[in-house]
Structure formats: structure tokens, C-alpha cells
Amino acid sequence: MLDRRAQPSYISRMKRALVPILLVLGVLGCSSKSDGLRIFAAVSAKEALEAIGRDFETQTGTPVLCTFAASSTLARQIEGGADADLFLSADQRWANHLAEAGLIAERRDLLTNRLVVVTPSERPRQLKELTDLAGDHFPRLALALDPVPAGHYARAALKKADVWPRLEQRVREAGDVRATLALVERDEADAGIVYSTDAKTSKKVRVALEVPEHLHEPIRYPLALLRRAGDSAKARAFYDYLGGETAGAHFRAAGFQPGR
Image (cartoon, rainbow, N blue to C red):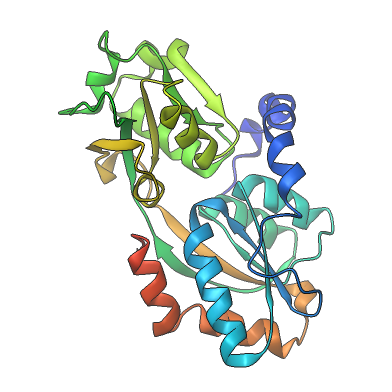
């Protein structure tokens, strides 16, 4: 369930941090054609979803238009009337938010993921546990903003590990999980917490620790068929296609696991 009480204090910071993302929303995508269907998706699924969109267009002739950003940003865009047929969120909160607004016709858990701590490749380190981040080697810790799923999961894990009070002042916030990864890639942070699938996309970081899954709620990616899609056969076909074997092979290659 979405915790609305946690949102207001982040709104101004989100607006500042997400400006670069919003500026490129019209640039990123699986196709630039205007006669296709549109999916808004968590940026962590970018590479896999682009490949799946190309396969779907080859097989059906229907272009798939992709918009990638933080799930929180995309949910707000959809709530505001953005032109989207499907929504792939990196957590349940933002899918729940749209469901409560009456904007979802159907949904299912499509994927799972997990968190990892990454460090720059040129300064790789191994951690035994999250409390090691409180050591002198990690004065700068990159995290996505709290309303962003990756940032929310990471803070939950750090709090449950009882290390958050020692790390809070070290945090460098980023607008989404890819921006978090970029801070570590540029050596502007000594460590960062991202999804394992994001770490897999980069040669500039190394995984220092897999975050124990019991420290946060399960990371599930719900796929929603939005009510605005109506009876669109194209949207329904892609919704079903994303749960099929061809799409599953792309997701597994990217490091995702099936929803459960």
C-alpha cells in the first residue's frame, strides 16, 4: 500500500532531481513511429524491453513506443493523463497508487530483481555485510530518492540492518537507479545501491555485496494494462507477449527472474 505520508517532503527535491529525466522522456524508446502502442517502464528494464519491443514489432508489425524513467515519475505522468497503454513498475507501491485512482484494468507480477552494493571498478571492494558501509572507505554513498523504488528498498534495508543513522549524512541522492549507477561509474560516490540488473549493464562498477533479501520487501515488477487502453487489441497482445517465452528470454539475459 502506498504510504502517502512519506511523499510531501520529497516533492521539491524530486522535481529538481528528475528534470534531466523528464527532458529525455521523448528521446528514449523502442521505436519512434507514431502508430504503435506505448509502454511506460522502470528505467532498470530499459535494455531488455527495447529488445522485446523490436521482436514484437518484427513479429506483429506493431511498433512499441517506450518511455523510461523512475516508476514514481511515470506513475505521476500517467495519473496526469500521459498517453500510455501499459505500465511496468519496479515496485508495488506505484502500481497500487494507479489502481487506487481507477487507472488500471488488469495487472500481474512480471519480474523480480534484487539489490546489490556496487563500487567503482578501479577501486573494487568486497563487503561482508551492509554495516561495512559505515567504514572510512565509504564517505559517499549513492542512493536513488526515497519515492523511487530502488531508493526506497535501499533505505529499508539499511534501516533494518541498523546502519542507516551512521550513513544518512553520507548519502548522495540521484533521481533514479541509473543516475545512482552513474555516480559510482564516475567515481563521484564510493559505493551505491542499485539493482543487480543495473550492475550487469556496466563495466565501470563491481558488485561488492548482494543485499540480503530479508532486509526489504520482495522486489517485484508489476505489469499493468491501463484502463485508457480500453479494448485495444494491440495493447492486450503486448501485455500477453511480455509474459511469454520470447520476452522471458530477454529478461533472463538481463538478469531478471520471473515474477512470483
